Image 1 (cartoon, helix red, strand yellow):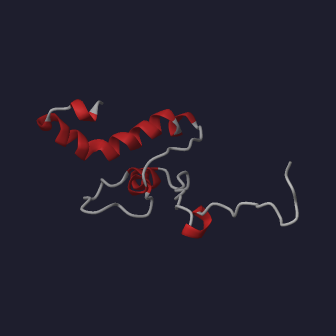
Image 2 (image 1 turned 90 degrees about the horizontal axis):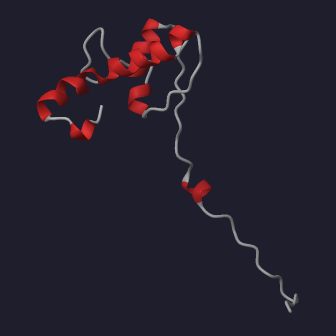
Image 3 (image 1 turned 135 degrees about the vertical axis):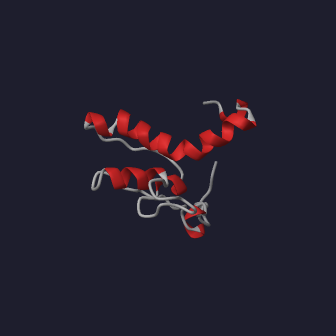
Length: 102
């Protein structure tokens, strides 16, 4: 669905069902085929141990829905940004004193 082109009255119901839709797609395209896959989503969608804020029973985040329905088959990989020290450029090598360049 082109989210940016949707009218407001059709968008809200689809946004509310997005987690379940995404979970169902992963089931159809991967789990039902007995395959394995890496599904790249944001951290909020991938959580497998928490239903999510304000979610009613039977609903929740995509990862949580899949983990409940397929115990042991779902793993969450959470990537964190590198520390500030790791992001710094390595020191540049400089010419040592007494060396000449011609």
